[in-house]
Length: 426
Ligand SMILES: *Cc1c(COP(=O)(O)O)cnc(C)c1O
Image 1 (cartoon, protein in one colour):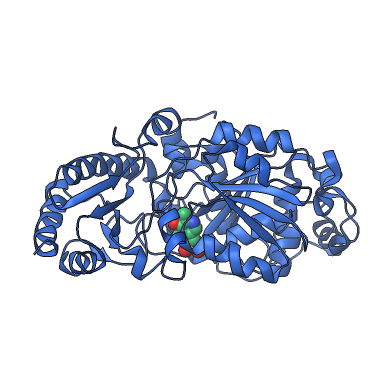
Image 2 (cartoon, rainbow, N blue to C red):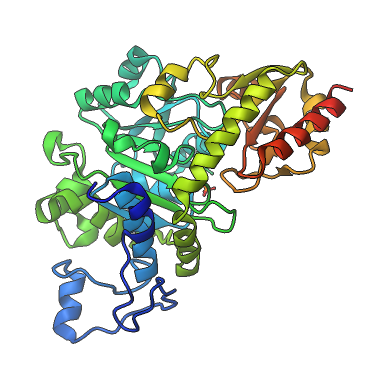
């Protein structure tokens, strides 16, 4: 990193608009871009010149956002998508063909577990879920058709921290990339590429935008993986029939994955972010470090207070010394373990429902990473489609609620939790 994080989150990927001098990045609300002449058009389509053709592929506002997040994550290239879930499909699309599989942590955001289980099958892709702490189990799950390992930095909702350097070593030994969902941490708290990840994905919907206005995603490539070694990635390092036989790795080197993601992935799947959304996300990112610092401060205070409450059975926050992930968090997330955690109440399903319904400052929503404090009961919402065992494995048992601690005055957050716990406990 040439400049500091606080500088990059404001300046990376942007310069005053060359046409007007506008200091903020304009919302380039346009579908297409006029070619200078037929020769330039041909060069753009041949990837001999980098430029805008059509906004399903690239758009200057969206590219500014991708380049900013790329700088914050320390990547080589990045592209934005219409949602975090779109980013996950887009991250795997260059790597997998029918019959291939990924090895994924069994502690994932419920929507990701669902996407990897049922929707992946429609592409002929498969997922082997493992306890990502058990490196022998990870190694044993990798077979000749495995093309990636996937985990979350801080698992949503259980607050489990993945030992990224150790998992990256397993991936390296197998000649496959480690793909990390860094949504819950944000690049301010953890930069997975520095710990050996090849690819980072985000739901931009969450902390990066930060105020609950946008649905978006991003895929960041480290540029460090050798796609040509081992022959496992023909889309990236063979003649690509979807792009007139171009060998992306031979032609574009460290930018092969990013260019493929745009030129083939976004072109054919069309999971594109819109410029208006990108603009809101750019505004949000300018204050990422300030927000994350306050999110973490508040989360530590709230989690500590909850842990001492008589109505609470357990708090799974990696920022607490009682967490089995605490040592990993101190090593991988020195600025704090985020602001998302679960609380197990002494009561069960019904107590959780009463608790959620009694909170006033907290909003009961299926979202996280907002400036506002948010709550949800996973068993009755995000994780209800999983089996009971699947819910327990994902840290979403019936007596568990998930809190996303906002940046309000912490005394007000605690007062709201206090009164709702009193109601829940009758
Ligand atoms: C929200 C979320 C997603 C999905 O992102 P969308 O923007 O809602 O599609 C993926 N992973 C994690 C960890 C999330 O929190």
